[in-house]
Length: 136
Image 1 (tube, rainbow, N blue to C red):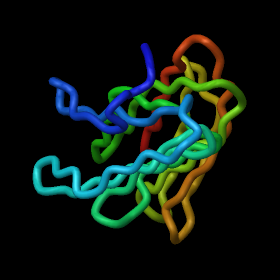
Image 2: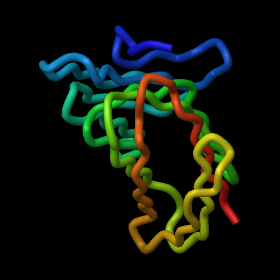
Image 3: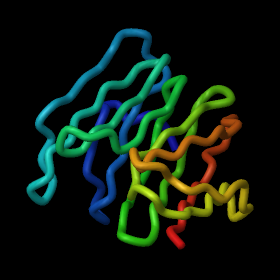
Image 4: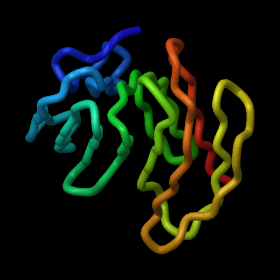
């Protein structure tokens, strides 16, 4: 896998791939429409942030590349790559329990607060890591 040169793209399977953790200058795309939803991406080596309809969907610090993001009612899945230990924040459903899996290993069980945000760290290296967040 590699960085997403165009910053944000819709894959053939209707998932989203985005982010370029290599560039130092900010790259930004606004008004990227998919099935009536409007996405906005800001990405560079310090942060990658994807918003959907004006709300945070996923953010990484430092920047990362996310491949094949798919969000359903019960499951969120994606692959992620970057250079180092990375903090990932997702905005999901408020006051809900979730299990987080990285490469099929359960790393945490969290309950979202009123904001619906969860945050976890993942050690990124040369190989993409597979993430699955399951709603209970």
